[in-house]
Image (cartoon, rainbow, N blue to C red; front, side):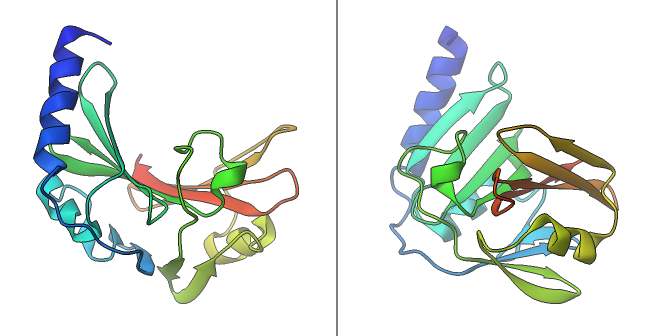
Length: 173
């Protein structure tokens, strides 16, 4: 970690220290336009305090991306220039090696035409039924990742080897 990144991370940790503590709530992930509980892409980082105080704050990509992990929500948000650019909903943290070790499973509903409660029981076929054929379908022994294009955004669904949804992510294409 560079000195610049170190001080940026320290400044962001100080910034969120006074954000209120919140208990877990049901997340609603909308896709047109992308938002989580009304927090839309390009929203300022200060608006994320609606989810409470993040359990982890990190600065990545040479200091250009700030990641807030709301461990009690199963929610990851990334900001570039203090504007929201990534929403990650961790459905099954025990199956997701990239999530923080203390991440709780998200309680989340996907809003896209119909309401779908996100859970490990959601299979790839159900996601394809909702979004249509993916633009990309990567599979190996560890996971399967479906990528769908919704307007100018990518919706990425990650599945366990047993075909259970473990993460849903939305980011600009």
